[in-house]
Image (cartoon, rainbow, N blue to C red):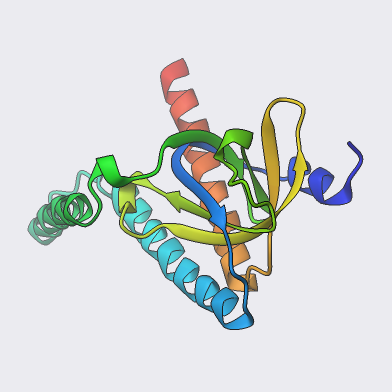
Length: 184
């Protein structure tokens, strides 16, 4: 397959993992697309702040103020988990599927695609923030020989594309650090 969109996607770093994913038909209008960009920006910021909290949580500082902040951070994490479970119980989430994505598009199993193949809306639910899915408009670009399909994202704003790239990079960096830690 020598398609330029697919090649560009394939040459970039991707998030690869299992997430709760739903793909549904999309009614596209300029106002709707702008709304998705705005909401996705908020979700990406929330995921980044939750990720930063997780990384900073391992600090061993004897400063009493820092210890109090860490306790508060822990309480906020518990509160976030409770809110997530109340807002969207795990049973109501879409099925978990192995996917790959970056700022250009996503590769999903073909059985996740709806019958209508016009414009699509890809909803990604992350465990850290289940109640706030990323909702990424896209179009089916190609079906792959391995039983998956590539959906190219439509009109993500520059800030959303940037946020997706940073999210993918942080995920990759975390995977490398985990691999190094287990190798030692």
